[in-house]
Each structure stands twice: as structure tokens, then as C-alpha cells.
Image (cartoon, rainbow, N blue to C red; front, side, top):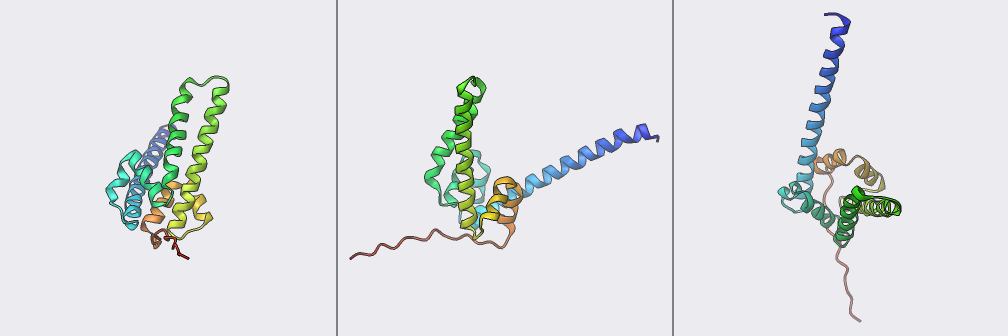
Length: 153
């Protein structure tokens, strides 16, 4: 085999290695999120349903009231981008920025719900699949939201 014949073979081999790695990471991420839900006392299958899993993420993170504004920002931003012209592009960018800010807050609260801090939040926000695996299979335990005691006077 000459050099010109081995280069395409190496490229194909590299392509398949990347594809297999992506599939393994995806499967581990799904399994990690399943375990994360189980740690939080929820059924693992809830992590497989697209919008419902987002709803459950907010619920587990003790941020349920933020779900509807997040969903509105995300959906309206992604639907409007196809007809964007002029100032509408700025509005879409603002909506998406608000949605990503709410996502960051959700990730911060999700990290806190498992006893982690801001560093883990950054990892969860930027490298979500990897940090879902860490949350799901790691030693972190789910911390129930502390109920505020009402004292009567």
C-alpha cells in the first residue's frame, strides 16, 4: 500500500473512531441523566422524553417557576429566527440570551441540589453530557429543598 492509498484509509478510520466515541458518550450521558433522575426520586424514563425532561430538570433543580419563561424564550427565539430581518434579529438574540441565562440559573440550582458549587455549574453548562455522567454515576446525593419553617407569634 502506498502513501496515497493509506491516507484515505486513515481518514475513514478516524471518522469511525470519532463516530463510535460520540455514540458511547451519548449513551453514557443518557444513562447518567437516568441515574440523576433516580437519585432525585423520579422515574428514570422521564429523562427520555424531550420537553418533559426539561420540565423535570427545572423541577429537580427547585426552579419550576422558571420553566415557562425559559420555554417561551427558547421556542419563540428558534421559531422567529427563520423570518428574522432588521430589529427582529436583535429581539431574537435578546430572547435567546434570556433563555440561556435561565438555563445557567437552572444548572446552578441543579448543582446546588447535588451539593456542588459554581465550578460544577460551569462544567454542567458548557460540557453538559460529561457532567451529567458525573452527576449520575458520582457520589453526589440529591438534597431535598429545605422547607421554610413558619413560626407563629
